[in-house]
Image (tube, rainbow, N blue to C red; front, side, top):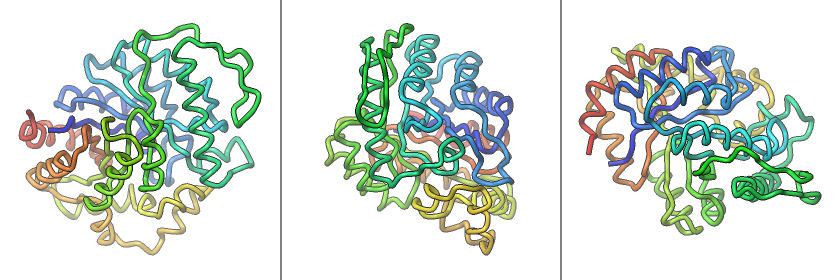
Length: 324
């Protein structure tokens, strides 16, 4: 059975709230945690966005055993690869073998154009993260890096405080094309829930690209509540802006654009985008199918604000049935 982890959604909860929830998740039986990386939330109703690296330092200290991983966008806008490497190395040094991976993605204009007027095409953004991965690996090896060509300038950059075990550099992919390309250079794959058929295709593409023996993780969005009406309404209020196609999510620059693009949606429209249920058994079956598909780790994101109830219910009625 795949490892079942908890997703910490910075866009929806204040950093202090998330510390409380990730501690609850560890106590409730979740075996790992994953952090998002945003400067802006996707919508005003979500309304938060703490700094992932600041939060991870605290989260690793208040929990006791679970490993962590995080998304990051070292494309040279908010984060230069040297800065990401230093932050990740510091976390891994303070919490040996617990800050285990960082997943590099090509990012969203929503977060990156706040500090840069330029937002290149996907092809350039991909090349930026590939070059970032090479630079970060060199820094994790203790090498001094000078790079005056390409997208990321560095002049005798070095990370002086290194962990014994550096974090793995994963790739964050939404499509088969990106997954196949990442299979050749990433240490593992992180993707996001789609239909089982699409997830199987993304996994196959990563394997064919060179990732067959590498770990593969999936973040799944669900909406649990005590009633179906509440579960569906939670999904609608908090996550409808995240139902847009990947190219829109990547290229919209303002929160209002996401809200306007989903203004005509209804609560019942959410059923086709994520699992909405009150039944723990339905979640057991769903997570088991993802594990059977071949994922090594599954990070569950309950999209409603009812995190405490979700963690308690899954800890009591879902996770024990998936143990082993």
